[in-house]
Length: 266
Image 1 (spheres, rainbow, N blue to C red):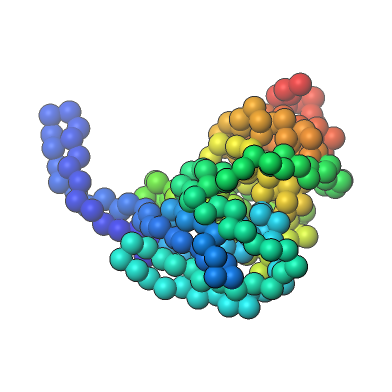
Image 2 (cartoon, rainbow, N blue to C red):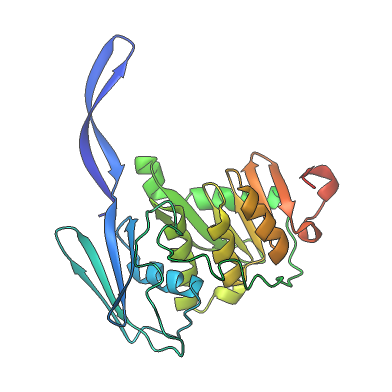
């Protein structure tokens, strides 16, 4: 269940009306990998397999498939018990837990946090009008947002403008992890050229995009300063404030068509 009904009292002017409101469900998800507590996050139930797969991939854990993936429900939330086969030891990097809005909150150390940002080489190009076409297609699949108005969305788009997948979640990072997890599970990761998000772009969204090898990242809202710096370092084309027929590009300008007609931040 991704949404739930709650009684609300709408006050408008001098009138007060009782009404049923649909709210996005928020629930705890504890992730256990190879017997070790790996992460605790708040999420919207559903697609947990993709979320865990995408999160592990962002943390550098490469796997062809889960040896074991089991979900169990408790009074406090959901437990995802997984077993993976990989060459690296999994240390439970996120044992301290994270919220649905901040993917780095559970990190124990800043050591090596900014390492590994090699430049992405990809000659795919894009412009503002194409980006708006993506968002129009995505909006048609945002059923949870249309019902509740309280969730984020992320999607992946291929070189021909086809939307490969769309996922919604109360957390921006969760939605991105679900997208990447789906791409991995269905062998479509190499086809993804654009990652779209509905909210702001922080450092870790850049990190997840880079780890997935997706050259273009777009958002409706603003980026952070560190997000722009790391996008430049990774040669990711970062576009924000994608509304109407506009997009503000902050990095990766070589992939932008008709750049003279667009807002340019240098």
